[in-house]
Image (cartoon, rainbow, N blue to C red; front, side, top):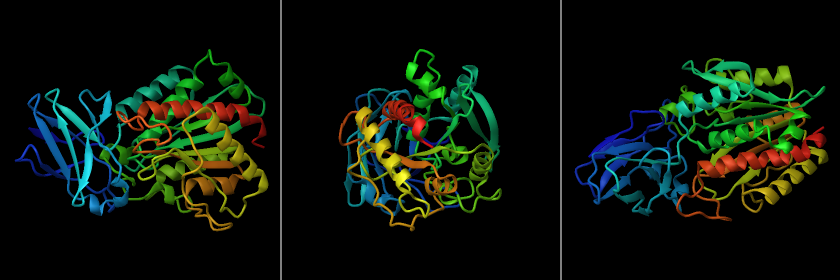
Length: 374
């Protein structure tokens, strides 16, 4: 048996692999940060038919140690089709197992969205008529593409959607793939109506360095990008600085920041009710968005984060910072690492395909609301 994580989004440390029934492992922290939760590794030279067991020994020190309860690890033989495997917590350690059907398998915290797939998405999107408005650079020099998909409206609404500020939240770029593919479907009359009124500005991956390095939360400098929207700098958070500069140049009429939540087994949103500039107009738009999304997709409003008290929002978060600066409807949209308990699918849990479908469903809501955003 050979265990490796020397690849895109790989993360694992081998402690002891002498017992195939109880391979001891640890998750590596983010570079320049103490955060960790994401893992992704490959096991090769397996004996087909044999049972293998793996133990993540350091989950008690992870960023969201309480969130492992109810979690099921994901596995794939081909890197394309992912499924959940039996997982349990024993003495503060995460145990999962597999009876090998092929000689090689990958395990991950969630179905990964690779950089190669990202590059293919960008190429395909541009070839289908999107415009690359600008391209920022991460600290390690990777591209952060800002794409525009729009029509020919005289005064279009400017709708912004960004994803994967937290690099381990790979469901966010799956969401973007589904959204982009629907936007470019020329047979979709509802999208034609949306694009007759709006331009969509899209950043499919805000944190490519962290994603490639197998980080959970931070960029190369150890900066949580979603805590940098009041202090963005070229030295620690050029990814955020780039997007903010483009927003100030272009304008914003709606903002969605796409994330994943380790703990809550539901799809939900967090709004701007704690912002000093929060108004009844914004409250009504938030309520309409949520109610319309409940009607069309895997979404609910009973579970989520506690509401912020009036005037007490953390303006370092993208959702609050953009909503305050541009007086616009602004949401953080969260998907689970576990499953959406309102419509559970035990074999896959929440996965890439469901994330992509949610992206398409959100566009239905935007098409219904675009005329009332201002």
